[in-house]
Image 1 (cartoon, rainbow, N blue to C red):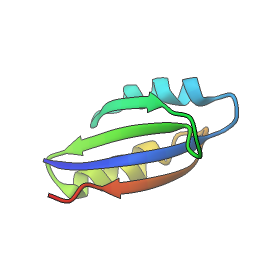
Image 2 (cartoon, helix red, strand yellow):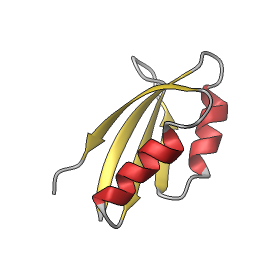
Image 3 (cartoon, rainbow, N blue to C red):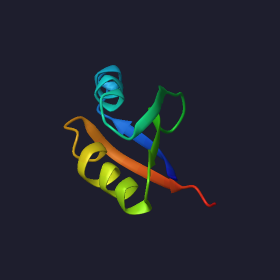
Length: 76
């Protein structure tokens, strides 16, 4: 199983909306609001690293109110 943690910055005031959308994406098993430089952290899991990259690129980063992301790939 391939895993990545994605740190997400959302448009101001839209953090809860983005969190709800993230929780409906297949491959995202956990997502939380956090305090600090980033607004949300999401855990992405899939069978392959290519599938993880697809979730991040085509689903997470394409959400309308997502301003930026930082992906951290878990080493196995």
